[in-house]
Length: 381
Image 1 (cartoon, rainbow, N blue to C red):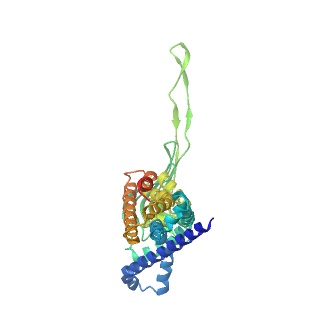
Image 2 (cartoon, rainbow, N blue to C red; image 1 turned 30 degrees about the horizontal axis):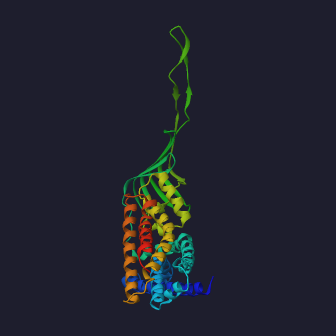
Image 3 (tube, helix red, strand yellow; image 1 turned 90 degrees about the vertical axis):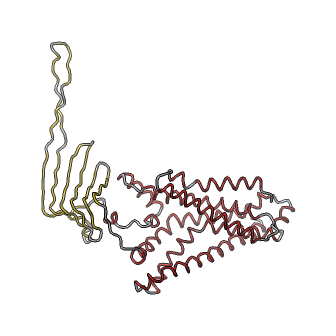
């Protein structure tokens, strides 16, 4: 790495860190102001509030990383253009493509760190943040759905007429198991309650009906004196055994957390946890899987967004402007907000099922990537 690369990279990364700290300070102050009455209402101590912001600040920082690195790129590059440093570099024989190298080195460092943080570290800290928000900042959640149908595993289906998440109790419970579309087991209970000590469900007034495996006998008979045989109708016999009792402890795949608030649940999931949860939802045939798929693909697209915005930032601000750097920085903010609008718009389309999540989250990157390439070709520098 040449001395010039180190000079640009140092300015670029230091400006990025400075912009992140400034925006985080503003966002945090605004957030504290908005939530102060809730903190007071719940009699939270300063230590508890600080613990919450210890998790909140990294999460916000990860969200604004693409925008902050774009603003940092515009600021550094426009300042260098204003001081004719870029003109001097180009006059010395350095190509414009070569001047992009230190910016992309910085973007690569930020992208790698951001991907690791967003994929595994921040989701784990978000678990604590989300628990805090659900307890103190959100309204108490009540599960009010009726006639709940859940596919708990392949060929196994659960039904409850109603469920109360505050008592962790379900009513008129049914669990049915099938084998090749044949019912082989049916468990019913008047009431089902979660036992937190045993970490199991307790069934009350339960009945279990088990159907023996099907055995078949095929017969052959003569066909009216003609040579050959014709298969007769297959004969099937099934025997059922019924048992019942007052209480029964059983371990089911479902957990009371399935019926608790899913407020930004995806924020507290690592990439591995997201993959497993998406597979579970798909196996159950549950609705709302698009929300988790959008989050998964967004974390991958987030990494490439950094490179696209850095590339666009250099192109926008590499020309010396008579209006000074202020105009270029303002243009940078404008493009940042347009990108946010595009991102939110297509995320909404994906979450509602209007577009496939794996395509929708990449559309803003594709659009801005095309714009950046067009600017690279036609905008004078």
